[in-house]
Amino acid sequence: MAAPSIKKVVLAYSGGLDTSIILKWLQTEYGAEVVTFTADLGQGEEIEPARAKALAAGVKPENIFIEDVREEFVRDFVFPMFRANTVYEGQYLLGTSIARPLIAKKQIEIARATGADAVSHGATGKGNDQVRFELGYYALEPDIHVIAPWREWDFKSREALLEFAEKHQIQITKDKRGEAPFSVDANL
Image (cartoon, rainbow, N blue to C red; front, side, top):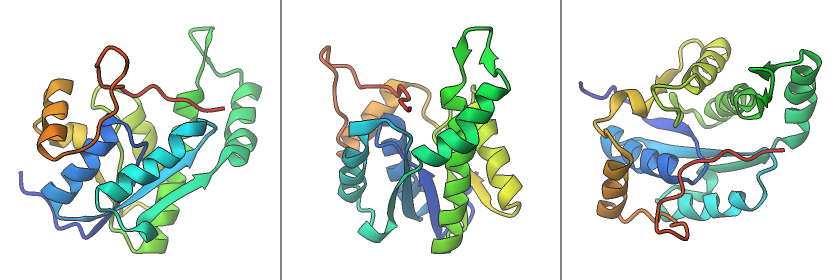
């Protein structure tokens, strides 16, 4: 499948394994200028390393957006979630999933401000997060092009991602056992 002509894409970017691979993949597969958006949802020390990794990947400083959205997250998403008693299977708060619409909203705002013609996320093709992101995108900008790498690319395993990272000299932090740190979302 030939990639459509995309000039600029706003990527929901954490700086972890998946989004670091996606950033380089967007640059190589689409030849697109990448704008990164990292939402500070209260994850603390993960924020500044994301900026450094985006710079190392060739993202222009003016195309790196990091925004503290904690207040808006709590006021407009978490509190309403609590009021609605939104608990999965009676015990799991939907803290990660409730953040996706806010991230999508901010990505669309950045796309409009930077003239981007596409947005992208790192949600896997087997999860509900892709739906949360994409419904947010289309609700706010129906004509935006959405790039969902996990549905498009040929990578079939985390090992393949690590090989791509090595081939393209993408720095991946290892844990104490030598394993790549797969995404574990943190927020307030």
